[in-house]
Image: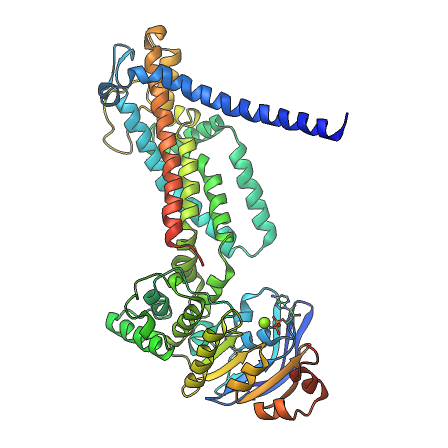
Length: 248
Length: 284
Ligand SMILES: Nc1ncnc2c1ncn2[C@@H]1O[C@H](COP(=O)(O)OP(=O)(O)O)[C@@H](O)[C@H]1O
Ligand SMILES: [Mg+2]
């Protein structure tokens, strides 16, 4: 379970997230929608503390994962990032073999046991619905894969370190429709084991894959509720306009 | 004068100057090959100089120069790459980074004879290396360092941030990210810069003059504390101070040809490295 309580976020002088309080249940998919620049990616990066890598930023309020404040001094960021995996907008496999891409997270976490690594690699590729396509060419470069396969490889790479949360920042926006629907099926599958937060520009995608949807605008969470309600009968006028494509 | 005429005069001038430069370059190369090719023989490449260096070969000088190339690579590579990593990946203070950058650039502009003097004072005397391969390699490495640091920085800068983000997002630390992702991708460009700069400095005479080069030493070095002959200095010696300068003239051209060939081979090596490694780690 992920929870934020009155979270504010600043890029030096710029107030990017304003008083966000939100609750995302375990093993559900939460979609974040809103016009570009409204703070969706910034919000997503709170949970694996990738915002820490940007100079001169500040966060206040509480971010809890399974009840633990992830911004507390005692939290090891590396450990947090193993529990909270991330998939980026543009597939970003490393310039290594398919196998080494998936094994990377284990290797940097000092896993040495070869047979264990091989096991995890296979399991992760299976979970990312990629095993059948790559099992005979694990030693080949990840760049030889198609864009959609690369993105599923990146998902497998994230799954290999056994996270409980999966953050996805517009994971299908660089992909063709067939690859996109494969990713969407995959999300429906992964929901059984992972808590998923997905940013998307695509309304139909949000409606198809998510249980709950949050609508952001200019750093504020305008409305958050059951996806069905957000798309059929939103409370807020701005939400209604946005999901009906009247602006954005 | 109309615009068209002006333009064609300008282009004609540019073209002329361009061809002139290339022409001079080819003339020099042709001159060296024409005069030097005659003395190149198996004996010339594998024997020691004889009869006041007007006969025999230049084998000890070839070996000496290769030792110095290897030595300066062994020093300039780790030091230069680590400095580059520090400046680009670790240094947060932009001001300090700028000062270091300006200083390294200035270092690259200092005349090589000054490096030679400095090398003598520091490595030969203060560190007590004596006139030796070690002292000479350190001095040449200093000369190559600015370019190695610079190319390392540029190579790191060219790497997409998405690689680093992908690595951090899996719980990797900064050091792991650098050694497992960033550096391997940057390596082809770094190696190219390294080979080019070492190739360049290995043709210098001034830095080795007071630190390693022997006037006449017809045997091979047995360790890093030995003096050696080296091609650029050998060339200088037989061109200016042999017992019979006219008689040793062909030897001088032959030596020049070998020196140019070594530098050329290193440049080709640099290109080949980039193409080969580049293909393996190419993105997209
Ligand atoms: N690294 C950064 N430095 C400064 N401002 C940023 C940075 N990243 C994003 N912003 C600003 O924060 C706001 C939210 O950005 P972002 O979270 O990327 O929006 P979204 O993902 O919804 O398009 C934007 O106005 C953007 O300009
Ligand atoms: Mg975004």
